[in-house]
Structures are given as structure tokens and as C-alpha cells.
Image (cartoon, rainbow, N blue to C red):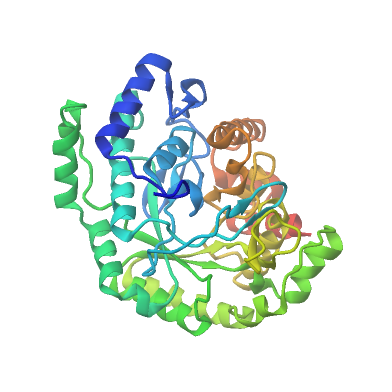
Length: 430
């Protein structure tokens, strides 16, 4: 076994580890109880997504934080409630170049989708799901049957792969894991007997984000979205690439205004979906979702394809993908352009260079939930989320904002939260 290969711990080992560390050290996976987020009914930043409660409007983006059980648990304890599971695809035996992430300043990576096999990915997600219910019971968090968190699946990158038997098996088990759930409960009940009393759902997720990276054919994006909406009946999100903003605008923001020397190749724009096509796709899928009785939304944005020049990543990788603070203004400008085209009516969740200091601005723009990845790869890790929520809570109190809609109104005035969010977004994008 190589040192860079993942080794999955079983659920008994992880639960014993969690319970022992809580009892003896008052911590979990190295994170002290002092920074755990304790949800309260009075929290002004609560929101609803896909008809369910999110105790916070923040989460972890699909990527390195959402592949293994212990990472998902750590993020949850520190305040993440929207868990975008690592993207899965039919190719589940990839050779990923290592190191694959450089987070010196802005982020660069050459990673791909899940580094585990599909069955292993499902197992990790189910383990995490069970452990979150156990932790909620232990800490007496939440009320009623609503768990306050959501697992969001992520899949790519072409329709043929999505329809393959092993990917279909993954979706089927995420929709109904009755057999696997019972097997795991039987294995952990000796460690935590109350697990039998918990009403853990057999559906891990009824919602999915379509990732359009890594060669996803532009002409297939709508077909993939329609498949998940119409055939699977899932609340469906399309995650767009920042190249949708166009070469001139991306380079103006990144190179001319911000002064980054990062080079975005012409082919990054050539092989991606074009803006006008995306607008037509959005309008079409919104109608399909309404007819099917599910929700349709956008995710902005994926990372930005760039040339591997002077980054601390292996030279054999000609292409790396930029994330972090350099991506933030590009993603915000794309959100503003799309929202203006639809008069602020789009449901947009956001990931792109968010940190504790621009989270409030991002949420005031009506972009939610907000997920992060790059910032959590810096010192402090998931513990940084406690600062996000501290600043957000303080700002909402100071602005007398009882809801996230009130936060938008406090920035732009008026009585219509949607228009207030749009005006705030347009101003923030300038």
C-alpha cells in the first residue's frame, strides 16, 4: 500500500474514537468542544433548502473535505450544515497525481473526482450520516425529526457514465439504504445502544449537483440535468464553470484588475458551455423541474482551469484548477450577470473564495447556502467555521436582521427581499 492511498476506518472504530475522545479530551478528531456549533431555534441565519431546515447557511463544498467520514463529521461539528459530497463518476479507480493541492495563497489543484471506489464512497457517506444522528442525540441538538443538515450528492461527467450500472447502484443506495443501514446499526448498538431509538432515514439524499467539469460535453449538460429531474425526481442543481463569464471579462478581473499572473488558456473557454446556451438551459430546466415538482437551482462556481505555471504542483500536469480568493470576484460577477438576466429569480448556491470576512456580503446578495473548501485547507481547518458564524451572527444582530432576507433588505432597503438581494449583488460585483 502506498502512503498516499486512503484507508477507510469502519464505523465501529470511528464511533469508539469519537466517544473516547469526547469523554477523555473533550474533543473530536482534534477539534475541541469549545468551537463546536450549538444550534438554537433563535439563530437568525437559519434557512430552508429543498423543504428542509438548514441550521446554518454554510457548508463544505464537494472536494477533499467531503470524501471521508471523519472529515464530514469534523465539518459538521464546527458548523457546516450543507454537506456537498465528493463528486462521483463511473471512473472510480483513478491515479491522482500527488501532491494535488497547493494552497500557498490562491488555491490550485490537479485532483479529480472521488479517490475511492463507488461502494467505498457510499459506505463513507452512510457512516457519516449515522454518526451525525448519534452526535445530535448525544448533544441534544435540534428539535423534531428534521436533522438540520443536508447531504447533497454530486455527480459527473457524462450521461453514459451516469447511466452505467455501478453509478446507478450508487444512486439507488443513496435513495434507499434500508439493508445497509440496518447492518450498521446492528454493528454499533453495543457501542451506542440508543442508536436503535433514533429515527435515521433510509434516504441519505434526495438532491444532487451536476458537475460540468473535466470534459463534460456542453451539449450533454441539459440532458444530464433533465435525467435527474424527470427520471430520478431529484432536486437538481447545475454547477457552472467560471469560464461562463467569457474570456475577456475573466481576464480583465483576474489579470488586469487584480494583478494575478495566472494564465487561463483559450481552450478553457472553447470547450466549456457558452453563456447564451447556459441561459437557455436554465430556462428549460426550470420548467422541467416545476412540472416534475422538484426544485432546480444553480451552483456558482467550479474552479477555474489554468495553466500549470510556477505553482507548487507536479510539472507533468499541464492544467491545474484555481480556487480561493482570486476566484471570488469572478464567481460573484457571473452570479450578478445571471441573476440580472432572470430579474433575481434564480436560486443560486455559492462557492468561490468565501471566507469569514466576505461571507456576510455573499449571503446579503441572496446567494445561499454558501460552501467552502480552500479556506478550510489553511491553518485552523474546520475550526475556522466558528469565526464565520460568529461574525455572521454579530452582523445580523447589529443590523436587526431576524432572517437572511432581512439581511439583504438591510443592505439595499425596500420591501422585496429578492430585489434587495439583486441590487446588493450588482453593487458587490462592481
